[in-house]
Image 1: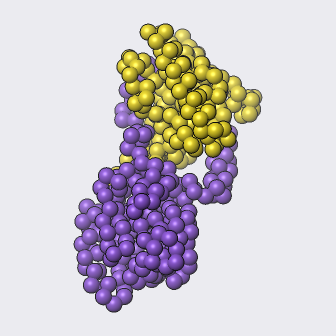
Image 2: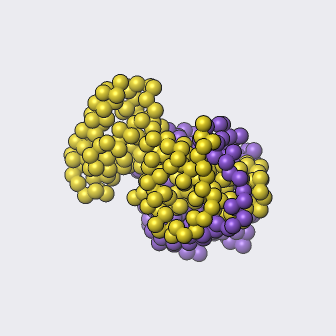
Image 3: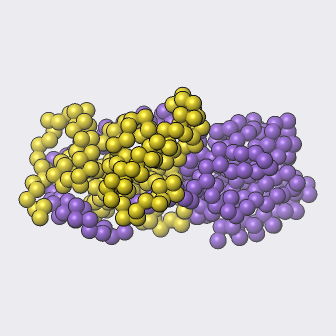
Amino acid sequence: MLIGIPLENQKREDCKPKECAVEMAQYLDTVANKRCKIAFSKVFSYFAPRLRSYALKQMGNEALAMELVQDTMSNVWQKAHLFNSEKGSPSTWIFTIARNIRFDMLRKLQNRKEDVCSDDIWPILCEQTADTKIAPLDQQITLEEVGQFFEGLPKKQKAVVEAIYIDGKSQQEVADDLDIPLGTVKSRTRLALQRLKDMLKEYD
Amino acid sequence: MSPALSLMIASHMDMCKKCMESFDLLQERAVNSFESSHNSFADNVDFSQMFKDITEDKPFCDGYYCPVPQSVVTTTLQLEGKVFNIPQPLQRFAEKARNQGWSKHLGKIWQAGVTIGGKNLAQFIYMEQGCVVPEHSHTGNEITLVIDGQFSDGMSSYDSGDLIFLNDSHTHSPYTANHNGCLVFSIVDSPLHFTDGWAKLINPLSNLYFKANTD
């Protein structure tokens, strides 16, 4: 069904990395929100060849290089919602995913027994596992959907919830970071969670 | 770089703004070279099957990347009524240490070994105030990260965030003397060798102990 989507393999050299960053960030956003294959094809055709060159240089083996490309791009497709343009450019994000996968690939290939994985060293794609505070909600609702509702929160509430539930900070740390009273952090968290709950109820 | 070394350096960076900044700079350079690494050969590679597999969410052999679930992470360790913040890369191992519990040696040294795999012995060590570890040499490499506190060892003094590399040419006797207690995380790839008086007696035990923990 997607065979009709052309892969733009050719001639994107005219696109300067900085300009591309904005464009690619928008595509990633569309992939995250709409599972849009066309948007993903834009990201894919820009990054897949680059990843392949990078992987070939690092691993020196065509099959492994393609595996690295596929594993990286799969993660981009499935976890686009974890991309945060405030934390860095799409290239940085995708590069760091590839680097992590390479670390774990090497570990596996060399049959090392070390129990140290890339996520210990560079947590890039850590997803908040279902939190007890949001637990009573319908099991059917996927993280992606919650992510979409989350986008709908007011900016200030979003920042607080993100710091606490995604970055795992304590309420006090968040208060210090944002330079606001602890009480404000608590009320914003409460309001945000209430709002999420309401949105999810409506959705049901 | 071995995984054990990567772990130690990442933990140090988590505590050291300067190294983190250098790292960011290096990473940015790597990203730039990655982004400009497109060569025209790649234009002839057919990615369409891969694109199809990915977007149809076909399970892909065994994905290499496995995120660490938040539930197996401990951000602080508590000992003797004190609370220590653990650098992010060590948090999964802190959870192991917490579950396993601490053992006390020589009156003032607390120790919690964790498996990090490979031919390594990794442990959190807490030296109480006024603690002296008997003089020892190393039969291999030892990397130590000071997580919280200070200690000295006759060669130098160390503070929170310091990363210490020692090998078989170093003999030392860590002590906390006037300092408050000190929590460190240390990885050795072969046993310590005690060189001082009565402590020599525990060398054979230290060997046994080392083997038992790395099997």
